[in-house]
Length: 277
Ligand SMILES: Nc1ncnc2c1ncn2[C@@H]1O[C@H](COP(=O)(O)OP(=O)(O)OP(=O)(O)O)[C@@H](O)[C@H]1O
Ligand SMILES: [Mg+2]
Image 1 (cartoon, rainbow, N blue to C red):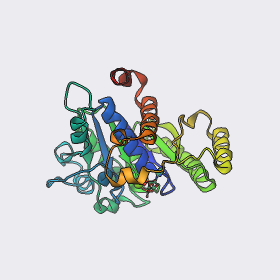
Image 2: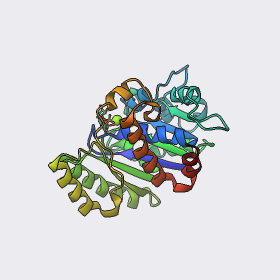
Image 3: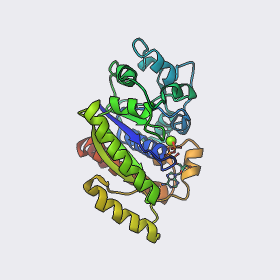
Image 4: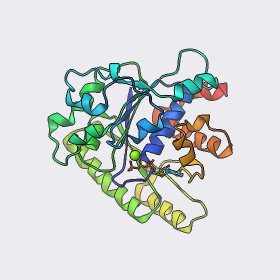
């Protein structure tokens, strides 16, 4: 089970959008996936079209991490029904895209001074969960307790950055924070790379910042970069998977995320799905 945190120190750069894009690609590829919405704003939960029926949110599960049953409290994304209706989920077993719902309650752990025992709360919950090939954790925009709890539970961290001065500087600080965190708490944690999001190829500033990022981060800057999409908010507002949205720009965005997912989970697992298209 590959557990990936999607993080950035800076807010609004596209963590949730990248989480949703990867979840959409994983659903299309038939990879059983769990999205853990660790941001108290719960944007990923909203975007995944979740209809809760009495399940506990992640904050309450974390509070009782020793005994709580995460598997019994996940909710299927509304995207799954659409995938089945549109016959996009491939043949075979019913597709799996589950959500551990976010809520403001998880904010009680978003402190800068979270101790070692509290940092292990999410790992503890995930250690009793089976059946997923991929777990995506959408983090809040800080390096406080919740992000550090996500890193403790993860194999890899995927950073998201916009090609702007503040975001690039924030990414450098985040990389340093990951190195320090690894040394102290999570020696096995890897940096999956940096996704540049909202890239406008016509912008000289973006071209300059991307070149700067390439120089600073080298092969950690992932390819492809994600372009600014005119209809992004409309797709997210409708709580739809980008793979289910009609039109050329959504198709192109789906391909970015297919490729990004391939770099996270390895090419082999996606090959069969691509062949079916
Ligand atoms: N590639 C893109 N093209 C167009 N709009 C985008 C793109 N990526 C993100 N956005 C928009 O930018 C806004 C912020 O994105 P998002 O919520 O994914 O960022 P975030 O890093 O999760 O924010 P936060 O730090 O608040 O959690 C959203 O309105 C989203 O629709
Ligand atoms: Mg977010």
